[in-house]
Length: 114
Image (cartoon, rainbow, N blue to C red; front, side, top):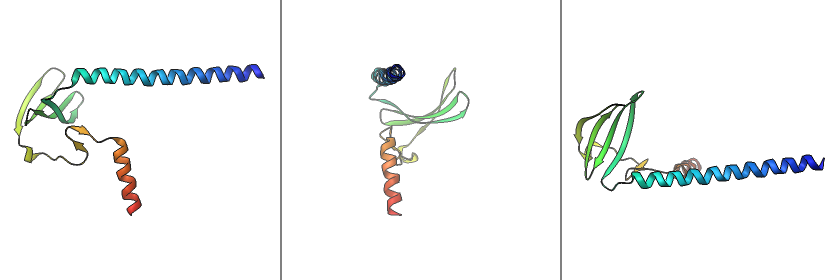
């Protein structure tokens, strides 16, 4: 009986260690990828999937906006865009999506008001 409890405890401890290790390794990989892809003058504002492997993207180069078509093998310039043509709603701020926590807090606040 005591041996079974010790085995269960050991398995739970190993499981927790594996989860913690996975969490920290994932965070480390995400940070290293962000460092490589950071840019001050180039941002992908929005991506819309048309079909498998085909997308339309709105990108910002400096202070100008453009739409491009992206496939597996090529990128096609579609048209320049004016900032007035774009909708920068609350879900997107400075090219960064709002965190899930902020959206959840907003929904909870709206639910409490109703």
